[in-house]
Image (cartoon, rainbow, N blue to C red; front, side, top):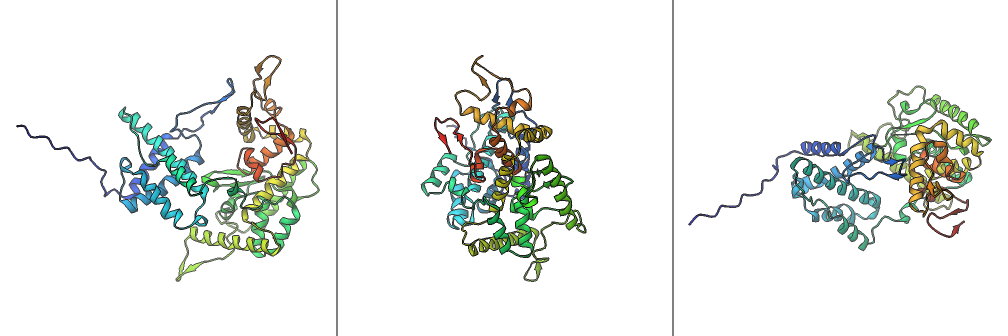
Length: 437
């Protein structure tokens, strides 16, 4: 009687694989899925082009996803000793969340970062499956994370990303409140608060801001959210010159302001961080603290100072992000009071910076309407938007102001502005039949 062949043990990735090799493998997978300069908008059909699930088209999105995937994979590597993505277990992510989120408490970890990581790991699964199909010609389903189950568990535990997350930092909609808080601060805290209110930068970006990032007519953000690079062209008019009446005067005043700011740090080396003067050196047990830990300490000190300043004035929920919201609202209010022709001229003269965002936003608006805004009821056809000028015709002056404020703060969409600016102008809800004040 013939002996039954023993089933071969499944070949596992060697446990000796070091983290550095595993990390490089993750980088290669994301680089394979990244396609730059892809046109996501079809002007002929006036629709967004649907791409395969594994494709990534934005550099900052790729960087953010890579960071989130590595964070979880590093935990699996250290806790489970596994480096073969085929053998990742879905239940491990539940353990990871419990250890890094549930047990520590909500205040230690951002709810938004958890949902971002879930999206990153889901995208990672799509990349792995597409890569396998491309190389092996086979369909394989990876089980790194159970997306729907994890989201369901988070909701059951009342842990979900909602409007309240965005309301934790108080929006400042008047100059007096902002200046009163500034007067409660001193030294570097005072300078940093003013800088955040002037440029709308995130605190993390401001702490990494270097002398070389001060350009001739704008501030460059090299270390933005998820690694995104951007520029601040429109600075806060309330803190620069209250007498500005038109866009052209405003733009010229931006140049003057940046020149004055640059002169304040004339002796700084190009690579030196502007706001590194909180503590020249921070030492722990006689050793100089690492740069990242030092920034974390500076951030904590400033956040505490801002909270105390708000408490002294009887104002709750004041955070560094409140200064960013003040910036957005100030720019929005200013643009609303500038002549529409001036705004259009400025947008068209900087079309490379603004056109893509305006087209995408119009596409988002049109999806929620029975007929697109650029629909001609007489001819019963969609009007082609060949030029940027034609695109602008389908936005109200108030919407242009809100979207410009959104773009300057690197959001690039109108929906989030409800949490940043005081949109007092009456507008019709997209897709609704009622008017909202």
